[in-house]
Amino acid sequence: MADKTKLQSGEARKREKPGYRVTNAREYNRSLKRRGQLSLYCPRGDLKALFINATPYVPGVAGREADYTPA
Image (cartoon, rainbow, N blue to C red):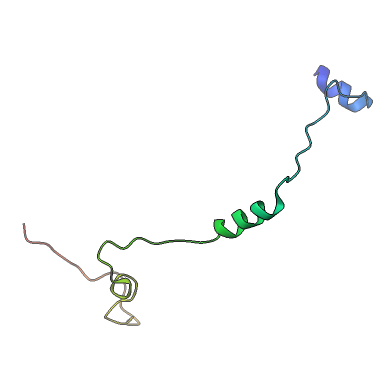
């Protein structure tokens, strides 16, 4: 609790907190833009088949259709 009492008393810190600044703003902004980009890898190469179902949504029917593989 000694640290807490020092902070409450307003005594100066022994060591200053480090201040961080962006030194290369152009590169930093580029990296922030790149962070939002997303690349997908599709092994079969057919995006439409992976994300769009051939059968539309049927209201009132719950769950997935049962797909069974032969034993």
